[in-house]
Image (tube, rainbow, N blue to C red; front, side, top):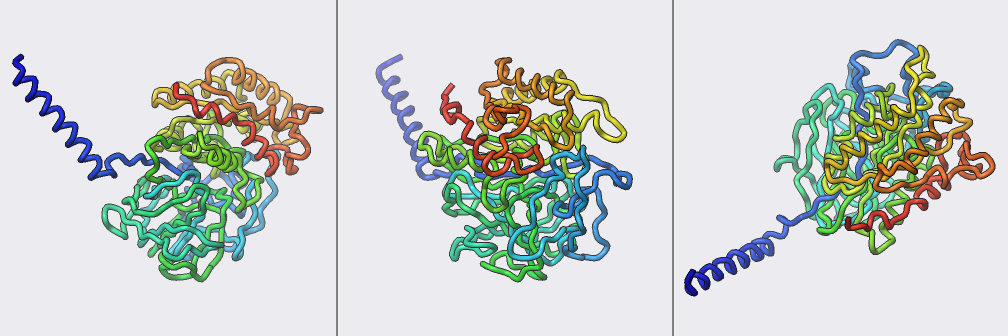
Length: 471
């Protein structure tokens, strides 16, 4: 090769490199790193027909099962009936949070010519934002008349000047067909870490039964007739503590930002924590990460579902099994680097104890599912932290055979080496005088879920150093 050829080739390479850098500088959005700052699981069920009377009852604070028929009239919300006490073998989903502030609690059966405003807590910040909506278990098409996102001030009010109209393919109104998941066009908005955001949806026509997350632990505001999605405040028909069609909120974050998905049942969902205070263990973990400079760019996405199981689908709104929802609720999120799994206590407590009895679960069954989760996560380049199952003696479905399985599964989590990290939630919450039970100061009375102090102990038990590893 001649010197001239070398000089020309070098010049071409330099020009290409310069053009690439210039293109990136002129189009910084090409390098945007979209990471979910918040997310929740849609409680998809597969029941083809309503269950026999007396099975799968839904508490008043929860939405009805997905297969329940929509109201024949566009009745917006129905006053709650008296909630029956959970049966001894009831799954964790039966333990629901109390009513929200700002109006009477309502049970949404359909929405028509109404606005819902849902409050969420971010984990990391960003300069642009987009919203993911899901009609995952809807049986009818849902018309979204308008959608907005804003910073939340207090109660249902939003911060002046922060409201942004969301579009979907450039359109403010669109129709979500059954089973569809959609992501909005991005909008410019400075999203703060650990800040409250409000997502408002106007539903102009009868929606039928909404796709729901039943334990939002934040107040959702339901309007009287009209589109109030762009207004700071609106007249209330009532409040709930559920999310409707809202799957996640993503931010354009720093290139180093990533996400942790916390995956599990009602203990991850935050059951028995105080509503509107962000005291679930994933929320408290997000606060710890944000306060640490080395981990401040790591988001937390809570994909817990009350009553959920590893091995089999559960009744009512407890959703399909962990293996059935893993792709949708964990792997579909962008930027996920870690999966924390805390699940199996409902398998132990409910399988074999149902009426009529189902096949009993074994430790080998649960270990096999956990290994499946590990293998599938690793195939996506995601590391997995195994979390030991917390004590449950005294819970309605506790029994000695189940305790033996819980102990064996925890021993495998701690010693097998199958996980990339281990978080010992049992050690953080057990009573030293009776390790099969929660510490008395962590037990709200149901002996199954921690209270706020117990959730804090769980969040504090997570070694943040495991998420700093570059390996």
